[in-house]
Length: 327
Ligand SMILES: Cc1cc2nc3c(=O)[nH]c(=O)nc-3n(C[C@H](O)[C@H](O)[C@H](O)COP(=O)(O)OP(=O)(O)OC[C@H]3O[C@@H](n4cnc5c(N)ncnc54)[C@H](O)[C@@H]3O)c2cc1C
Image (cartoon, rainbow, N blue to C red; front, side, top):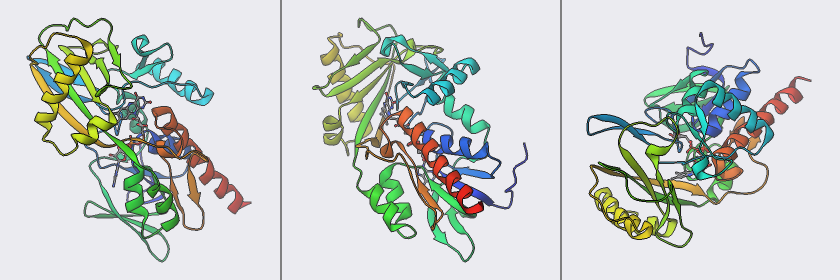
């Protein structure tokens, strides 16, 4: 596929190739505009990340961010049905009748969406500037220009990026507070004697745990992902990750009643901005005078589906504005 913005200029530049940014990009690209998406990650995922590892000589992967997603909105259901047909999403009844997961990893739908677009990985947007004719995005030693820039990153990071060029949007994003989440990834030589493949608690230190290896399309050793509750995550926020992993593994065995087993793989990841307290309302915001917009789960609901709906809402606002300005 040939892209029309090889010189670093695009009609619309989107910062963030998570579900919100790619949903906006997909909706806008289908109208023929040139879209460029930048993401600081090494590969597709955002908070729908999947980490590949080798355990005992076998490949395995951990979904250490979002665990599953629901599809309730009719338009999102259609998209998820297409993902299922394409083999990048499967139902996961262990988490509920309406639960879906990416397959073979949680990031598979993100990868599939990104493959149909021009997404540059490993490019962190550092600064937004207004030039005489265009908006400029300075990123990783390069400079990109665009007529409009859409910022689809977690609220706290959007507030920083937008502070100089769009103080009102920055202030809106700045109202949001996200809860952190420590995620532990543990592999075992034999299945743990826990009934069922998921564990949830609203009061304990472990809010969620899942037998990752039992999700559809996964292979390799017995693996578990363990999420610390927000309060527990806050208390452990600055601990070294190895200590966090050991501490939360002990919490997990105590919570599930499983006899402690020695893991053959153990790691932890800290999500600083895991789950936002979402602002209710419009779903996205676009300032036509500035050519700047924001999308993300924090503007809709703190879920994969909320991020997709927010991205689509932002695309709708941009297109509405384009139509109004050409009529
Ligand atoms: C631990 C955890 C558990 C969760 N569990 C669930 C669940 O079970 N079900 C559910 O539906 N949802 C769950 N979620 C929430 C869900 O993952 C999010 O709501 C959704 O993925 C958010 O999508 P987004 O596009 O708004 O943001 P993100 O996925 O965070 O995407 C933002 C992207 O922007 C990029 N970025 C950030 N700053 C820059 C920059 N300066 N330059 C370039 N790129 C940048 C990031 O690399 C990232 O790819 C969970 C999240 C976490 C962390």
